Image 1 (cartoon, one colour):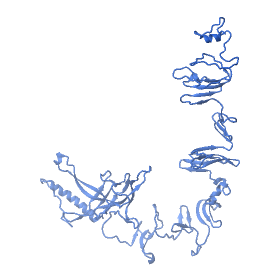
Image 2: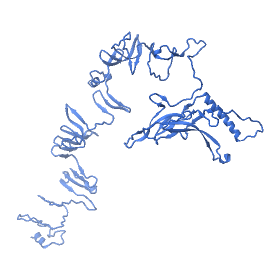
Image 3: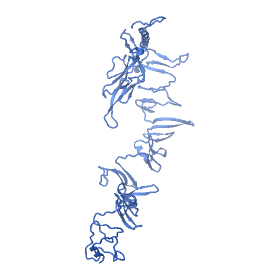
Image 4: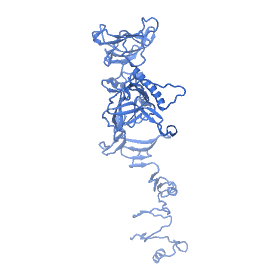
Length: 575
């Protein structure tokens, strides 16, 4: 087995050196390792679970294991503690170096001693003063040859995941398995336990008092050779607080008991189906009959008030209800008939469609439908019906779906003979209206004569040099720079007014760059300036030319404002 056991014997006056203290450490360590080796099997004691992280990494959680190794100096078999603590430098492993969807990666741990803390010159004179019994974490696509020395924790697979933005896929941890063969369920993780011969018992009796008769027990069962060796759990009452997994047949010899009631009918599990009331009394033939689930709720005058979900063999449909009243369950073609209200009462009509945050769609008892979220219609059309007329609606049109022969590429709101866009603040008021002739009204409820009728003022180019159209002079050019106004004033000026703008430091002016013809009286209330010659109209009419009053200058015939009067003008003036 190895060398003899030897430890220090201490007494007063004994001279000790480092080798003597090391002997005592080795003795204690060797005793513990021999204890582990011969009283426990190698494997995981607790923890050491492998969990996935982001960026194609995994983490080995805190835990402890023991190995089984042969010492090199004396060929002795011992077991050492492998401890991975929280924050261990090896606990997070980056597996991005491995190729995706390739070989499996094994994660395993081993025992290792490392000399530490050489920097304390006062104590160690540059020598390491501590030995760190650290656990070493390894990863490789090759399974370790010596599984007693290298304790396997898990098998990891690296895969590829597409990014949400559609960019190139990145590596991720696709799976972590604790089985070497998932189909055959061969475990990778081995857990340490008591060592020794196999415990062989024919019967385990749970002795709860001095008399063992009637005590619950567990024993091997070999009654029917065809079924093989079984296990019998004999107890008047057994309480399973966790999940029960049954991979074979489940036979119940007795009643199935629930809280507060006893179910004596048959319950047989066959593959993935629960069959209820499907066999005749002799259990040899199948019979088509009603069956389902029943919930016992209360008792009243000896009559059970229950809720039921049953299959009706007579009506060939599922029914659900309370007491003796059963109603058909809406599914398939029956579900489509729900909107006709011919098979559903007021209590069971569906008036709401909900999501996690609340109600998404709701209808009231008058048929009004309310939506509490966005409504996505793709390129479909919302039709508004009025007495069967479906020529009113809102649709999305574009390439391949024109409106009036035009590729609109956007929404279209249309009515049969007209329509209105309006507001309701302070009462219903039309903003834009149109009719079947194509006339558009702004502020006008019934455009008739012109293609566009505006009831009110109108402003054009409002951000730079606005031009305003009004029905009464508003003084717009006086209150804003670069603004002009065309007004059909019928109040004060009683005239069609074209008033120019003030810009670049100049006064208001109206410029006409082409020929101006005035078929009537031209009245100038102010100065008139000519940059070129004034050419009177030629002809034989009596009033052709320039006509002045008989006394243009007043009492003595002087024309105010003319300092120099050409001879030709004088002849005209005083002719």
